[in-house]
Image (cartoon, rainbow, N blue to C red; front, side):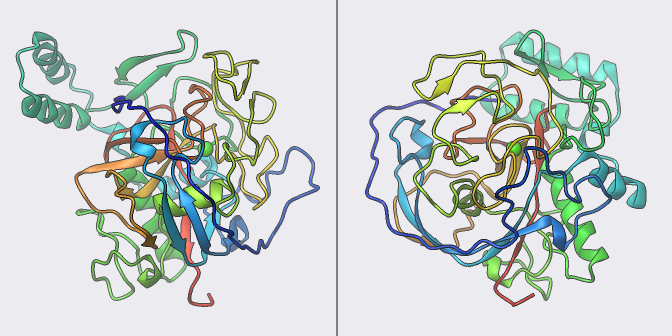
Amino acid sequence: MKTKAVAAIAGASGFGMVWLLVLSLSLGTPVVSHGQAGSGGVGPEDLVLVRGGTFQMGDVFGEGEANERPVHSVTLTDFYLQRHEVTVAQFRAFVEETGYSTSAEGPMDMEARRKIMEQFASGAASEEEMKRLHEQFLLLSGAGYWDAEARAWTGYNPNTNWRTPGFVQAESHPVVSVSWDDAIRFCNWLSRNAGLPPAYDEESGALLDERGEPTGDVTAVRGYRLPTEAEWEYAAREGGREVRFGNGENTARSSQIVFNADVGEYPYLDRGAYEGRTLPVGSYLPNALGLYDMSGNAWEWVSDTYGPYDGGSLRNPYIVVGDERILRGGRWGGSAFEIRASHRSSWVKNDRCNNSGFRVARSANRGE
Ligand SMILES: [Ca+2]
């Protein structure tokens, strides 16, 4: 995990009108609504149609990190987004059907681990060498470990993976300790089961159109995929509304979002309890689109690579620069700052932590 440079000066801008139509609205439902989330796989009933529109993406409140700026105009076409984060049960169905072994289930090899750690600790390695050592390290077993009690990152635990995240999870909890590589394989599995062309080249990570050719145009993709970063933020902000958190609220409360409400001083934090683990998906109310846990619970991989915003107006952006992928929405152990809808984190694509999960999306421009 890394912390991106923090700069100052906000550039909150005006806000364009957006329109949206929401199908499958869950307003008025009780606080707990698990729907189909406990069953195997992900089906059409698990998806919410999000109508496209134009919105101002980024740090519209002028209180985030430099990488959330400049605020810029983004126009999106319709898409589907999974109502909940992918659950342990859904991920288990994928693993049991395919025999897939996740990024965190590499060889234990404690000797190789020790040697890499020694080189890390020596402090002599150049930045390039550090990157190479990290790559080697990620081929070994384990996942990044957020220690719930210490409330701190304690490095990589060789025994941590989606089955053993370090705390007890029921089948209805969001799967964690999964990498971007794991997430796209889950997406391709869903596509194959639905008779759709897979959305990803599993080796290169390239997005694929319906003929299997690499594309940066999400409207040319038919299969299940991860949401783009812009789609994720638009959906978290209820169709691009100027709202701070993914549940449609401007104040973070532990009674409404799974995060660490017991850390930090922010004008938008109502200090409260800290669960120290994931909760079943959909434990709290959804946002106005019917989407649950867009802030908090599991961190969510999105499809694009990580790059700076350049301020231009964009249509269906799919950013492909560098080799880092983005996580959105913050996590069960994170602060109110991190669960803001505009916050961006990034890791290399086979990295994983006991708070990294995802939800799936599909393009909706084909009347399917
Ligand atoms: Ca989440």
